[in-house]
Image 1 (cartoon, rainbow, N blue to C red):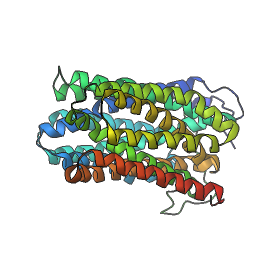
Image 2: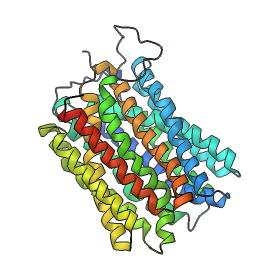
Image 3: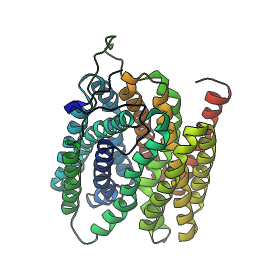
Length: 393
């Protein structure tokens, strides 16, 4: 398979080197777009509250973003294989920058919902493309390790983004916060223009109209759905839940979570490359399960911080392994679709979780969110046993 890059730079998938010029640029670009996004993660619910929305509306606003990303990711994967990596990546980043910058002009919930839908399209396109670009650039025999390093860029953004967003919203206005996020997205876009992207190869078999998913990526994608389902309850409602309990220091939760996430990614990918997903999935999901139990209980700040560390270790162990698994058995010319399939289920979990947990919080209280989330993790473990132990891949 030809691996010639635009501008004539050669690239060999058998090379052992991970940190090439182009991989470094993609990692930096990914960091800045995620930093802009993560700054709004805990502040969008506050903004919705300022506009007069309750827990149900918060869930819908969070879910609207992920569902729009979900809706367009499959087509992003298809376009990646027909129009090229760079086209999809730059288009997605451009949409993200414009939409998040426009948040500052929002005065009503209807307009916010529309912009969140548009933002989801941009984020879905850009993150599907960046994951595929990283997969192209990483040597096949070091893919788990390389995807772990790539994921660190998002983790670093998570380490600083939510804390920075919460700190800034106390001293500047929401429009100013959204403008800063847009500038960070623009920085990602400028870096992305310097990447030399793999050329699109001519399809030997014409793609069918509705051929937008890669079937070999379905098993790990189904597993990640039940895991990211838990994330909707944390991102959208944990700040309000901790405040209701009189527990201070929610910004430390996000920082500790991100640090633990980064630590786990430094070794989990290597374990996956050497021993497969068996040694990372069960331990990681058990840590997430314990996290949900602790959050349902949540008596004090110490428990909150322990939960942050366990969730970061668990999620950081499982997610890169599942993403590497999702592209492992896909043909090279369908890696974009494999990544799109994986992140579609990823988004679906967050979106359904946020909307469902909004209803649960409204009817039964915040604690019930994490009890349901714990059951979701048990479902993921059960599916893993079906797929792997019984050989139903």
